[in-house]
Every structure is written in C-alpha cells, then in structure tokens.
Length: 257
Ligand code: PGA
Figure 1 (cartoon, rainbow, N blue to C red):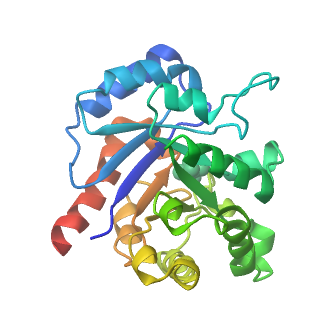
Figure 2: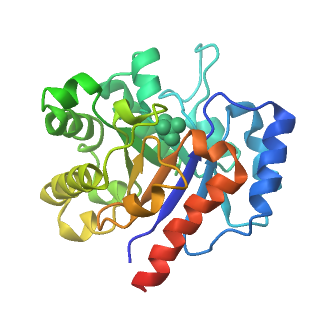
C-alpha cells in the first residue's frame, strides 16, 4: 500500500519553549507506526526538535528552503543547510509563500531541484484560490503548478515527491473541501502523474489534503482512495487534535489491511 502521511505545518507559531512542550506532548501520544508522522516547525527550532524526536518515529520537516546553495540571500536557509542537519523533508510552494513572498512556479522548480540534490523530500503544495475555484479553473491551475515545477524531474527523482493539494480557500478558513471535491482533485492529480510517469509511479505518489482538516473531518477526507493523509495547519498546534488526525489515518490503514 502507498505510504500514508500526516504532516503538521506549524507556520509562524509557538515560542521555543512552547514548541518543545508541544513536541513532548506529541511524543506522549504514542502515535501510530503505520502512518508517517511529520512536524514542520519554524527554522530556529529544527535542531532542537530533531534531537527531541531522535528515538521516535516522528520526522521533522522544514517549511521552506531557498533554491541556491549559499550566498548573499539574507534571511534565507538553503537545502544544503537543512541537509547538514539531516532534515529529511521540506514543504515547497505553500500557498502562503506563493501569495506573500511571490514565489512562482519556475522559482519553486529550482527549490524542488535544490531539495532533491540534497536528498530532502519535497512536500510540494498546490491548490487554487477561491476566484479560480468559482471560475471553474481549478484543474488548469493545479495542472500548471505541478507541470511547471515538477514535470522536468526524472522518474527516479519523482519517486521522492509528496504532493499536498491545498485549496487556498480552505486554508485557515474553517471551510474544508468536501470529501468529494478532495477526491476529485486527488484523482485528477494522480492521473496527471500517471500520464507523465506511468501508473507504477503514480500508484506510489502520496497525495495529501490540506485546508481546515481537523479531528472531526479527517476521517471522511482520508477515506477517499486517492487521499493519502493530510497537511495540517491550525489543528497541528494542539497535540490531542493532531493525534486524533493521525489516528483517523491509522484506523483507515488498519481497516484496509
Ligand atoms: P489549516 O492550514 O489546516 O490551518 O487550514 C493548512 C496548511 O496551510 O498547510
């Protein structure tokens, strides 16, 4: 079966002591080993949380990385630096990066290359905004985000990609995509991947849903055949809520075993 993943995107939240506290609380939940559990704290906390989770099955992701290896890019962090801390994953192309930091598909392509060059798995985010959804352009938008930033990769490289479909209108709004809307887009993405890389690669590509996913709706979303878990924002900031989402995924894995 395809890997199932629940990743917590902490965004720009928590002080250092709060981040350590939340990590301890998450560790105390004794989360599933059937599901890959990832947390993505802010950059300054990565090393400490990496150390704190060393003997657990919790993985640490960065929320971003720069495309260049090093140099005069004040305030930025390179994939090379993350790799030197043995960080295994990074988000790339989150809609907040696209909107507030003007990250384009072609710049994100460079970031994907940088991450892969340092053996860091990109969790590549895509998704349409409300205007694009209402104008029925959502398939085209997601298609070009994926094609422009990922479809130059070789098959061997693409096997390291995790895709997160996050409709912008659902992020932090409390308005979740319906299970049917999520499944429709995930199936569309898997089909795109299949046409480009073949069915054996598309069959193993994890496609996560993100956007107001919480303990009450996770199960309905994750039950869909092409939804392989979630990228969780707000609900990942409370250990019990995050654990409930991981457990929802775990129950589905167990039921389908
Ligand atoms: P949300 O955020 O769960 O708070 O909607 C998801 C995300 O932005 O990754």
